[in-house]
Length: 171
Image 1 (cartoon, rainbow, N blue to C red):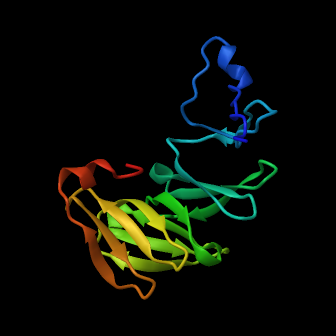
Image 2: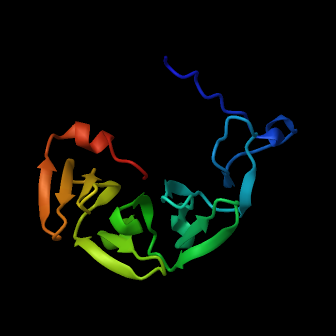
């Protein structure tokens, strides 16, 4: 048997006059609960990424911050001075990976926010991390999909022109 579909409920505030969703971060969608705002109002946030413990990380690249919301919806600052980090992804061992477009880098963060450079001189705007710690990234400047293996070696996974430029994640 195929399971019945999940139905998401809209935030209860959506029916209020003047409601504007921009800059608001909402909790995960549950079948039996309406959306609830998490934390305060932020700048344009991007790239939610969840770890196996139920924490959800999201970036505010213009404020140079990465936030962490725990399973109860409590929001704390995970990393300040993030260098405009965006396009977040969780990798093996729970490390948080991010693009830093202004620095042309891909970095990873440990549980305490320690930063490690994964790749330099890349114009990454979207990333995926595989189970071994290899990173695939979209590069809309060079119009390719690149890769960084688990040893930090940079490669060129696909150089297909406009299709690679269109599949960039967070911008």
